[in-house]
Image (cartoon, rainbow, N blue to C red; front, side, top):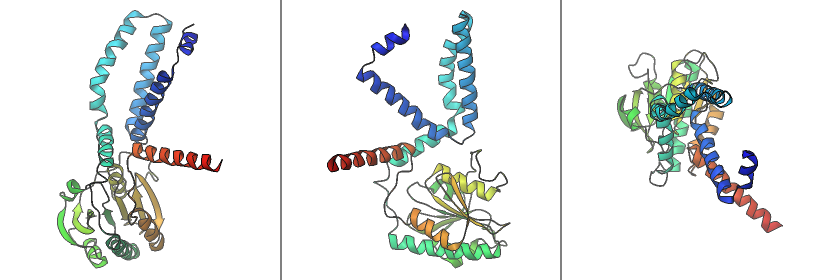
Length: 288
């Protein structure tokens, strides 16, 4: 009877309300997907649903009272438990609002940076010297640059080869190229990835750091393995491994060298896709 009453009282406003709530949960799922928090979230939901079913089926008043009071406690505990994920979500939302205000290096300078990085990565790969090169896009990397040694120099292959020479003091860390196309720092410390869905469970610290910085920012990271000499690139929490200099140049030109600014947040991506769908529907109507 309750189901029939609900169906009879569905209004356009109620459907819109349900759609918006579903959209919020769908967008939130992007921030937790592939992180350690997803297992904890599943466990909490499983316990809550099991207790709710038991209290409803067996009419357990004490258990129902406990559930009602647990909701208040969870409202306080969830921001503490999921603090890293919530911080990442807010950073990505804030990042979407800074696109129009943040300047970037000219396209010609970005092309030169790409060429220098590719030349350095090719020689580092041949010599099997480990390297971690971060190319800043829209997200600021100032807090990570401050953990290293300030360089503030032009990006050249020779400078990168010198930095990542195994016997120098700057080789153990990341070199960060800022949004003006200059080498801001070397030997910088990056956050390690929080994802459990790694492309290879045997990934070392350098590759985990490359994934980590791509999860908390929209930066592009080039990493060279010290053991195998293989080149990989990370962006958006994903890794493209086993690259040669030609493929690396092509990918960097598509991601870092592009003039069009892309939204790095999942909500921004959803809005962009929705806009493309609306445009396609308008074109279809015109042709019809």
